[in-house]
Image (cartoon, rainbow over all chains, first blue to last red; front, side, top):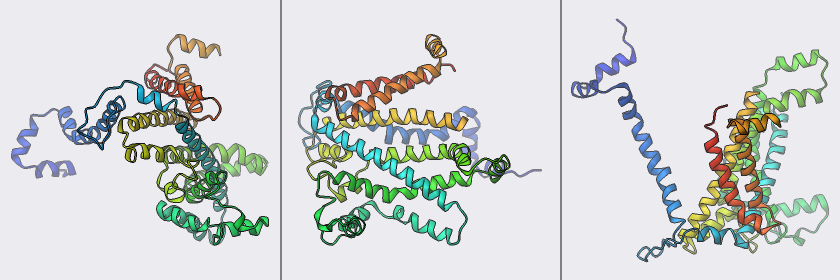
Amino acid sequence: MSDTPIDRVAKATPPVLARKIRGFSDRAIAWVFIAPTIFLLLAVNIFPLIWTINLSFTNFRANRPNREVDYIGLRNYERILTDGDIWLTMQATAHFLFWTIFFQVLIGFTLAWLINRKFKGNDLWTTIIVLPMMLSPAVVGNFWTFLYQPQIGLFNYGVSFFTGIDPSSFQMIGDVALAPWSIVIVDTWMWTPFVMLICLAGLRSIPDYIYEAAEIDRASKWRQFWTITVPMVLPFLMLAVLFRGIENFKMFDLVVQLTGGGPGSVTELTSINLKREAFEKWRTGYASAYAIILFVTVFGLASIYVKALNKVKER
Amino acid sequence: MTQFLSGLARFRRGSWEMVASILIALGVVMLMQPFILWAYTYSFIVTLTGTVMFIIVSHFPD
């Protein structure tokens, strides 16, 4: 007689419980198993979302819980969408998002392509390149503030070495024009290895025989790159862009540690601005409407992106 | 183009998802562009329309 794991579980079930379960249909048992997960999902994700939508139509302030709450309709949305300062934070976020993703994809793919070639010390270089990603954003933000110091910072001296500019003549964090680039550089430094790893997985998944067949057909290296390598790595690249896009849209810790949103508000990304509205000015209703606007934007973008990703995978 | 229009007329998923995607992308561009304030003001309604439409039309037949 066979003794499968299911048989063993059935034998181990206490008789009282077994009698109770025997009356259940398969569907009911399935519900019993998934109910805790559904409950958790509702409690942790869905309920707060619905509550936030509800709050976004009110003038509720979390620091005055006893004050009467009024429903003010769409006024919070109206204020946010006509506020020039929030518009500026959206532009700062767009700048940060576009350039970090651009550089991370470009450098990450190039590094992956180089690492994928067999050479001595390949593993050691991979480990060294991946190191920044393993650090805490707070630590990275802190030590880059030292690197960016105009008097003692290594970054300024590096720039001075290559360009001949006086190192104390520019301030990466203090200058309105340079500060947005300072956060782009740090995020790129930290997260390019992540994109590299995903690209490397894509490159290593391409079978050698495809390149061999292309060699036999006398396809040039350039043609092999554009007709084999790029199309086959594209789904992986798109996945990396999706992950980095969503991550950077809600970027907070690194930028707060590095610039605190300044000088002025040129590096104040939406997440930093949202935190200030919610927990410094305590405009909870207003901040809820702000969060919903960001949520809908990210959700919409992720939807079309996942659709595009599926299309690329189907090819 | 004809296929796209006939897809719209026959409530096919592909064509309608395309319309929803264009609306979402347009809304995001309007939200983050630095040129016109009224485009920023109306960006959310465009993105929301696109997103809700995307959720609905993804249940249309292929």
